[in-house]
Amino acid sequence: MRRKIFPLLGLLVFGCGQFPNPNDLATIPQENRAAIAYERLLSAEDTLQFKVQQDEISDERRNEMISEVAEQMLKSIKADDVPLDAQWKYASLLRVTNRWKETEAALKEAVKVAEDPDRKINDTLKLAQAEAKNGEVEEAIKTAASVMDAKDEDAAPILPSVLYEVVPAAQNKGHNKELVDLLSNAVKCHERVKVDPNSDDGRAFLIAKRYHIHKAEQKMTELLSSNG
Figure 1 (cartoon, rainbow, N blue to C red):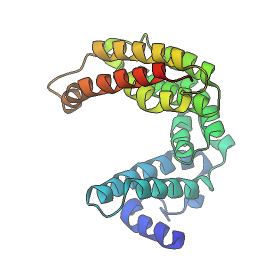
Figure 2: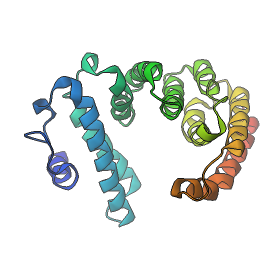
Figure 3: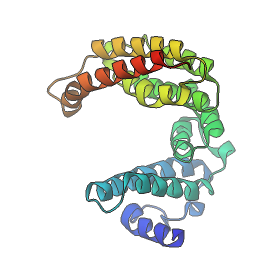
Figure 4: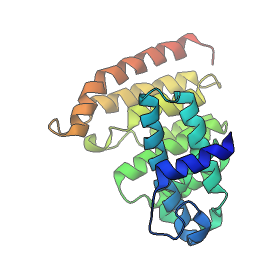
């Protein structure tokens, strides 16, 4: 079955590119491979999400196929040759294949060189998730808490990342009370976020704002009622 998947994705996803063989990372200089692979991963995600929306595949199958695509590309990437400014892209490949130790290492490097607040906040929160996945829950909570002083215009990613990525990876590992505090602070960040209500992103944020806060409140109740 797997032999049939990659040719299909090659036709549907990768298309023609600037390199001689766009389906073969071996033809690309090592220092460029993580960045090119990341762009291909995004294309694969978009294509497969469309198939989910058309009821051609399930969400579960979509995730499996994305992981398979990333696994295939990672075979051609040497971690030591990934430039610092591409570490976050490399980490994106590692995350979807559940290579959490390697993800953590890559994101620690990425956070050091993040070029703007948005990149730093997103990479920091993904680092917190990786730490939690690796059993470093106290460190994960500290890492996530470090972005809570973000400016109002930069704080939009905080609650969704804490709620849907960090907390699920960290809960019931002996620190649920601290996770409640973390979520509470993330909700406060979400409430003060400033967006342009006339932009597509701004409207989308405002539409989903109450929903995410409600889900966070539910999660806090769940955490408090458990013994984790």
